[in-house]
Image (tube, rainbow, N blue to C red; front, side, top):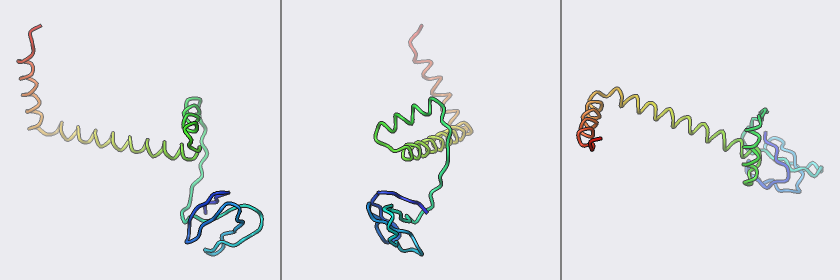
Length: 122
């Protein structure tokens, strides 16, 4: 269950608003009278703790200065990092496939030889 305090969110067919006091019981929000807004968003969130070095702390502060929360900054950075890693692996696989393509390698050598012949004398 994800607990949200003082935010307006939709989830599970209902909306939790700031100022409401609810408890999530068997799929329905129920008032509990303590001034805390709690609702179930339908997804489980995983909380982790991280030790930041000085560089990571500065990077986090930079992202927070742009208006992101710590959680948004960390989630966005993790997703961007994973995407860069996927693209890097895909590019390496494409390069390996081209390297293994004998016809492509022969064409690259022919183009290289032609370029060398057309190069101005030193």
